[in-house]
Length: 545
Image 1 (cartoon, rainbow, N blue to C red):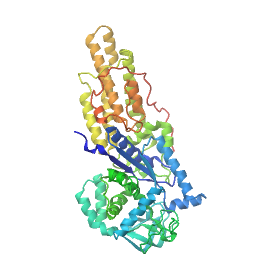
Image 2: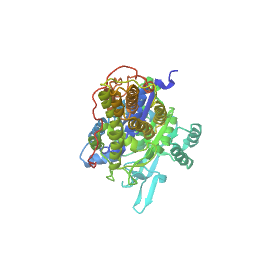
Image 3: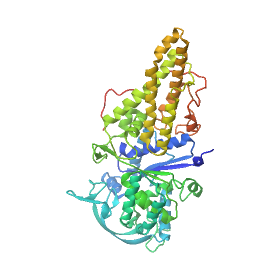
Image 4: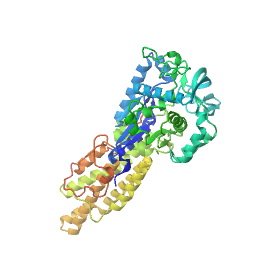
């Protein structure tokens, strides 16, 4: 029967704060989301993958001023760095959204108008702490220690005490409705312990939050005045006295802008609600309390799922540019290659919790899994077929030497990649890599070849069976691993003499799960190519900044 989900699959990442060059910790969730998007495309889903940058904040305006630059010129430079790093990592979004995009401003304005019409916006006076990197900080999110009062997520950023007239969103009015939604949709925030954290937060009482800044000059213009009239002037510009939209209300709206809201109702009807938001744990509250309330206020559906991943840690500390303990993704690509960086990040870092990493751990993972295990398996398989069978590609064996273990690996891979446990999906595949390498060591094809040359017919048949299963194992592994190592997979199939039938971003080929059936194309006659090393071993461990 046809897959009912084949019509479309929409996934998003959080949009990155465009205040500095990106680190690996910034792009980690984008790498993961890209692997998921590639898997969905190869599976046959009409997939839309959205990522981008968050460009409006007081801190960005201050940083631009310190450098003597216009804020737009500054964020243009930062966005170019993000795009270059994502290109180096083969990130394949269907749209890279910027909060400075014109259609995004229209989406934000429509959200505000809808909330106002629903009675959820009112004018009041805000007085309290403001974090230039985070925004207005409720008392529950403040940390007081020997260093004073600071934001829990940005302990090194000096807070500002502000008192100004702002628009507020009635989040408190949505407490019961949110509790009911959580009860009726118990799986919509995952992993489960992240859901429970947010339930505890909701039950502690919700506070209204500010959606505007009175004195800011960098941001989306606020579209209505205090009397509810439009703030748009006759020349089409916006009345500066109306203020600016506060960053989180602006930033969160990007997900529906990217789906076509409000300009393209047909596209929006197709793509919304999204199948998954992929976010970091530090912005869980924004995405699973504030954002759903905003959507409810606007009369829009909620996302089907929010997946919350953890942080990359270095010796127990959160990786960050301000601490100086981060990895530059461009340096990592220069050392490990694009596929090596993607693989090391997604296999070494769990996608559901915090993980402590180091340059040494990334190199060990690269050398052990890619250079030694998978790369060596492909290389010696192609070499032995050329040497012992004169390059003629043998079909998988009827003895099914590796088929049972592949079926188990495939189920683990499919279940885990569709459950967002990317590290476990990789582990399922590499468990099968180990099984294939053990078959080589147990069967010793070089001894079978020697016996076959002496006229031993059973040894000749066994040699073809072993090599046929190894070729098939390499084909299956390359296809299944393609979402993680997209440039390596076509190279493996070329060495095996098979055609690569997918576009660069994973679209256009046959349904992946059909191709991952044992022997799906193994009966086709053909010849293997020339063996070429896939992952040169890193003998010198060059540190990355």
